[in-house]
Amino acid sequence: MDYKNWSFFYRKILLDFGYSEERDRESSAVLDEFHNNIDVKKTYQHLKGLLQNKDVFVCGAGPSIVEKIKKYKSRLNEGIIMAADGATSALLGEGLTPEIIVTDLDGYIPDQIEANKNGSVVVVHAHGDNIEEIKKWIGKFSSDSILGTTQSDTSGFK
Image (cartoon, rainbow, N blue to C red; front, top):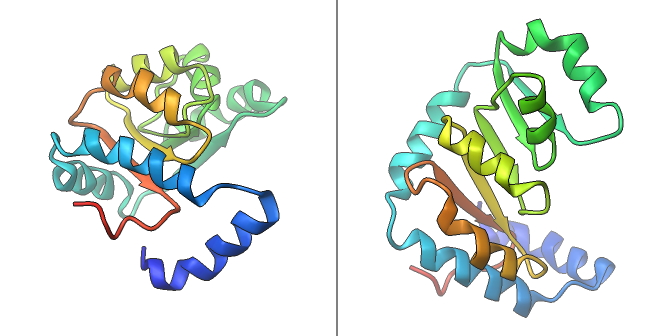
């Protein structure tokens, strides 16, 4: 992402929601520290390969997620399954492991860790409200299949 282009929108989000840029940066720094010990480029290339020229089914947690998984299960098996947080648990409950999990660590994390052990790439988003969750859980994921994201300025990071 080109932060220069994003910063206008980010500033609006901070104002509209009352988020703390300082806490966002702190969370990003915690996640960045973890990434200092892994090959991010290799994981990024793997993720890119998973997505390139593929049908991707994005599953979000909601009241009808299990019903929708059952209804479209055969179709889901024809593409790449991307789960947002809690959708991971619903997918696992129906015998499906997502190839990709995008999380800010507010779903049921043990299921996300289990899926990661079974091959899911986990994309963890750092923001000001999940610093403690990052510290608690990040080391439990496989270091060769995890990436971090943030919405804040990381120009001071490695």
